[in-house]
Image (cartoon, rainbow, N blue to C red; front, side, top):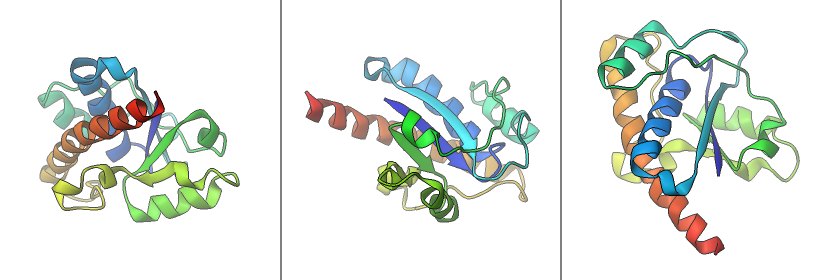
Amino acid sequence: MKILFVCLGNICRSPTVEGVARQLAEREAAHLQLSFDSAGTAGYHIGATPDPRSRHAAAARGYDISRLRARQLQPGDFRRFDLLLAMDEDNLRDMRAMAPPGLQDRAQLFLSYAPAVGLRAVPDPYYGGPEGFETVLDLAEHGSRALFVAVAAIIAGRR
């Protein structure tokens, strides 16, 4: 299963979630054979590495996101990925507006897979302090693990 994480600029939230999900899946859910990528609904930072604060916070927890590069979401992504997971409602709305006909349902909220966290959106840390980047990491870890459980159930249902 191919999963794309999406935020606005693809330099804070979605690359952090991509890096966390990738490393957790390798350790905890390799049997699911998941692949991950991330993108932004806007093209502000195409080709840029994740925000230095995101890289620093991730590295402090053992996640390396330094090799990731920002890219913009494309309509073709709706055919290439099974799930496109938005970090918030605004990005979800923008994603569904650009989705090819019949593929809008592939776009969902990332945290809809982790209702126990009590949030629907991963807050954008860009204009805040370091605690916002820690919150993104917390939500990435909880959300990724919950996503793995849901994907395992989906895969089991296909067999």
